[in-house]
Image 1 (cartoon, rainbow, N blue to C red):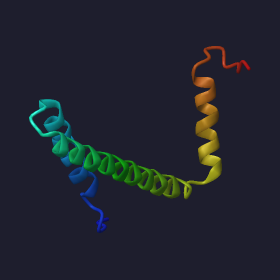
Image 2 (image 1 turned 60 degrees about the vertical axis):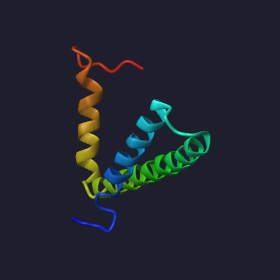
Image 3 (image 1 turned 180 degrees about the vertical axis):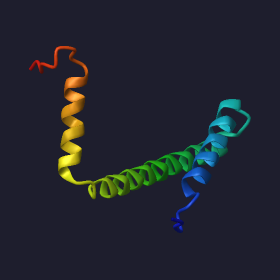
Length: 89
């Protein structure tokens, strides 16, 4: 499913990586470094926002799974680590 934000995360991350490389090379003036830092922090925030939106979308999609199916998987996972099948609290 394509959205207007398709590829936005990847583009922002690519630009952020380029900024990090530029700053690590220390070949920019102080003013350029400050500008790159500001751009980088804005891009990092945007990437974080996009990841949060994606997580929320996945959680919303997963909420369509019947609760009983989710609970049975959770219960199976609780006992998976215990050979004797007992749950210790």
